[in-house]
Amino acid sequence: MAVPAAAANDPISAPVRTGPDYFLWLCRAASLAAIFVLGWIFWEIFQEALPALEEFGASFLSGASWQPNRDRYGVLPFLVGTVATALIALLIALPPGLAIAIFLSEDFLPLPARQFVRFVVELLAAIPSVVYGLWGIFVVIPIIQQVGTWCAERFPDVPFLAGPAYGNSLLTASVVLALMILPTITAISRSSLVAVPRTLREGAYALGATRWETIFGVILPTAAPGVVAATILALGRAMGETMAVAMLIGNSSRLSWSLFAPSGTLASLLANQFGEAEGMQVAALMYAALVLVALTLAVNFAGEAVLRYTEKRTAGIR
Amino acid sequence: MDNPISHAGDFFGDNSPESTKMLGRSLFDRTLTALCIGLSFLALVPLGSILYLVAKNGLPLLDWSVFTQLPPAAGMTGGGFGNAVVGTLTMVGLALALSAPPAVLAAVYICEYHPKSRLSDGVRFTAKLLTGVPSIICGVFAFAAVVLATGKFSAFAGAVALAVLMLPTILLTSEQALLGVQKAYREASYGLGATRFQTIFRVVLPDAMPAIMTGIMLAVARAAGETAPLVFTALFSQFWMGSLMEPTASLSVLIYNFSTMPFEHQVKMAWTASLVLVFLVTATNVTAQLVFSKKH
Image (tube, rainbow over all chains, first blue to last red; front, side):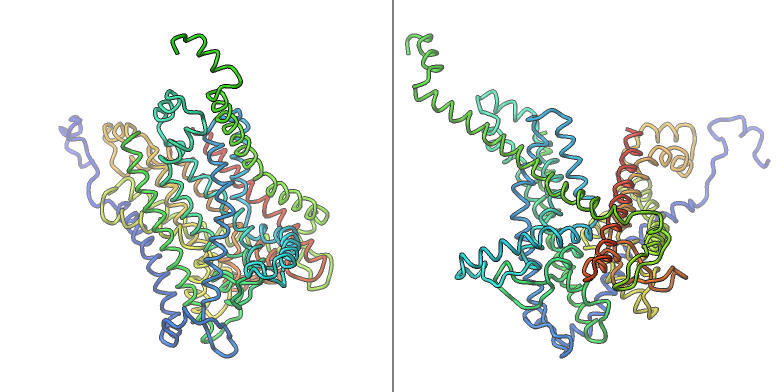
């Protein structure tokens, strides 16, 4: 219409839409919103936790009693429970998790068998947390109860195994957590094992190393930072896992040395008490949530840092 | 040593130290291989047990009426969890509507517009941090931001919690999807005189769409199975959902509540709900993988 006739015939000066790119502003707004959400989460939780922060300060972390009816709040038993369940779960899940990662990256069995195992592990990751909890109530609790009773009779003097043994216990929660973090360990370890260059493996074989000498001597050391990252990230996941733990751990706020005693974690505490909390209890729970966020973020930061280091290191030899 | 043939004989013979060493190494290798395969298949046992028990305990009560009736009161029999299915679908749907548009748009920004800007780095960092935040913290946030502000538990609060959970997953998978689009496509589009907007909408997004959809469906599957963000935001309800601003039932919270009840029928109902939930989540997951594999 308003285009000059000469310009219309000239491909170089063809009409180009100019002016502000509204879509860019929309995308930019969405990006800012994503960052804003993270800030909002922290601000909101901090704001609600403020009364408890002012009231208890650092003694909140070292206090060992949690009694909402007396307005006494100390989070130490739950802090200990969180760290203990996550570490025990890791101890249980690491050997099979690493074995599966090696199995998936080697050619022991033909491809269909490996794909099947991989599918199984991915399915484990897809099962909802409550279903693990329900399964744990009917399968793991009776087993742990029996094992616990047997251990308490045999070794009454070992504090970790002391009775009375409950089914709803620290160990029950750890066993189910181990199952839930297995896919994380396997997936990240596998990708770092696969990233080890072929030439290193071929070199080891050419020097006469057997398969497992190659795995232990060359492949695992090369992939080690990746495996460490997998472990740390799995630890972070285990610490934040809520429902299965809340259903299995017994939710006690008493500190105990025994693996077979009911315990509690920060996440299970939140899940159990938020629904009916009022007044100072809400503030104390928000404070506990803040502690949980700090703990998981610190662990995840460490994991990501190691993962990034791995990528940098293997990039050189690839 | 001067006769290589006799040396080789030693090597394959059974009683020289070299051969026992070789035998030891080979034995070590085979043992570890067997151990490794054994441990790998050990992972089948719990999964098999879970699936078997969910099917065995869940199937007896499964028929159409569980999808159309309300949950039984404590100690009563019969009933279903129709309201929980509706609640789960509503909250996940609303969460998707809240989180997917900003997540995809932010991914477009960090991939297509200014990949190296400070804002893009900030968005990537934020998304990484958010994926590490435990799901219950999303619930705590929604509790503070919606439940305390409006004074009541509601489906909307549950949806907000799920949206926060889904946002980083969709953002990061969409970024990967956009990175997977070949650079030549973009250059060809620009070469034909398309603007950046036209290139994004006509070339880049259509090509990345299957992978973006996969990411969205994986996020949906995860959100549908989550309990922690809902347990004190949407709470639970015995009744059909009337509005978004009232306590709402969901499948996962129903399983949680019923699993600890001392009534046999309620526990069976929890298993049946688990069967439905596992089917829902697995079906979404498998569909997502299929959509993705169609492209690559």
